[in-house]
Image (cartoon, rainbow over all chains, first blue to last red; front, side, top):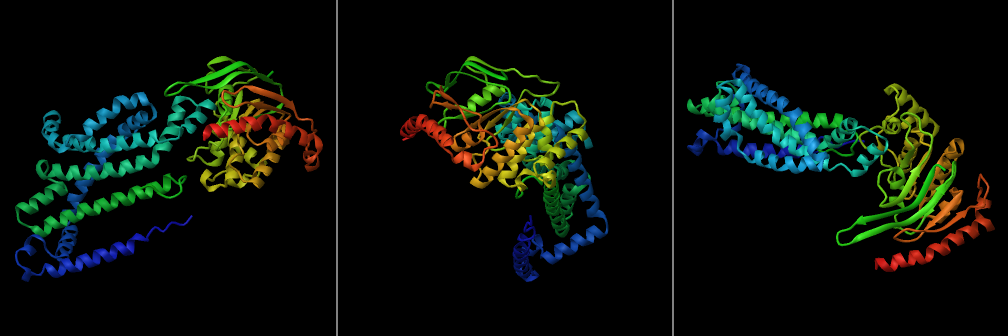
Length: 257
Length: 258
């Protein structure tokens, strides 16, 4: 089956180009003070490539990426296992669903001081905060994915004598996989946002720290280069999850992520 | 008797009042018989199969399946209405699921499934996913899973109900060939009288809800049943006999639905 994989790209490129040109033209020095805080795209791109080339922005990006990946890697097994159990068993869901709703609503960044108290001022507190933030969207999506599985499939598994463990691995997990991947995409993105937010105040490396330092030294071009790097991470996350989805969810017509 | 039903009843607890789906069903299906259950739609035929399969408990009476069962060999194998294949498993994996409880290596299961797929003309489709197959091929795979399990009793819940007429004919012939070779005991639910006459040794006619046994009719036709035999006077007589019993029930259902 052929998918029109790139059909959205020309339209997006055209829109970006049009917006970019308008921005570029309006950001001339003649337009006054606005250009100071909203430099022209050409200026931002130049700063971006300059900072990638000198390694400083690349290092900041790598630090953030590592934090996000570590946090999500810690959260994912727990979130997927609990979410799948909750989606599978109504009894577990009744208990877990309110807990997930409550935990999800807490702004994790606001809990940073508590993490620092418990885990000390260091990498473990940062990674833990990313992990906790990534946990909820992944667990909730996994639960929805498992709850959506048609009862017929459980009936078939029971009828042919599949054990609970086999049913979990052969029915619940694969059945929930499309939504697990959606959850993974959200978890990575929220992990990125949280990592950058906490780096603003509680790290010496990473994109958040980069952006904050650029602001403090009034290097507005660098600040924008940092924001651009963050949005590129967003695109990378989407592309990676879509790739995984194409490989792992071949059994479903169309795509979910 | 592989299948013995004694006074089986089923009552569902509805929202307002209990709904009686089955009332006092007693019949046997002897070894190797192809028994067709016909009845008006919504009369509890599916529920009855689920009770025989052990997926549902009767509210009253007993449903026994008494068959020799080896280790890991299920007593019954159900072919589900809309094939019931797992969309995330390949066709071969789905068929191999019939061997779930068998003490076999994964490779052995795979080989057994592949061999059966080859037998029913799905040799080249083992690595495909169900959504890549036509409806007829999917139901073939569903039937393959039930046969591969080697359960002595097959329970088939309107397996061809959703297929077009030609595919249905083809699958009926294939099912008969598989059954002739294996001589399993079959309990086959259908609402299609013609299908029941074509396939069954005996036709059990059920009433509308709550289901009771209206009649048990032996199909007086030899096998294989050619088109001549199926268009003959005997076939016509039994078709008419079943319809005479069903017509009133069907009409009542229709009025009730209005």
